Length: 54
Image (cartoon, rainbow, N blue to C red; front, side, top):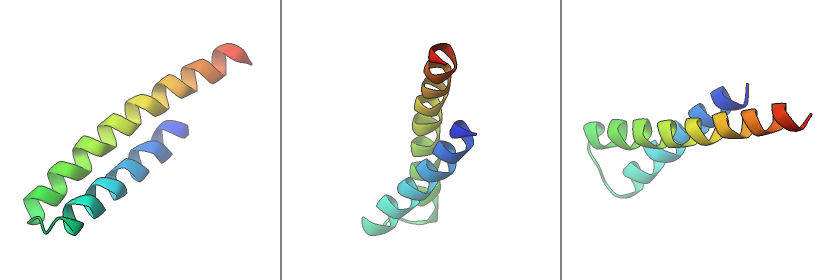
């Protein structure tokens, strides 16, 4: 569940950053995908750590 939330949050952050910079639709998609993957990986690590601790 954490991974999905992090993925969606990352996509939203990336889209907003590209829009704020005045990027085209392709720029927004690229930023959204890059941020979503980065936060998705962090969410996966957090899920693993939490499952190992408790």
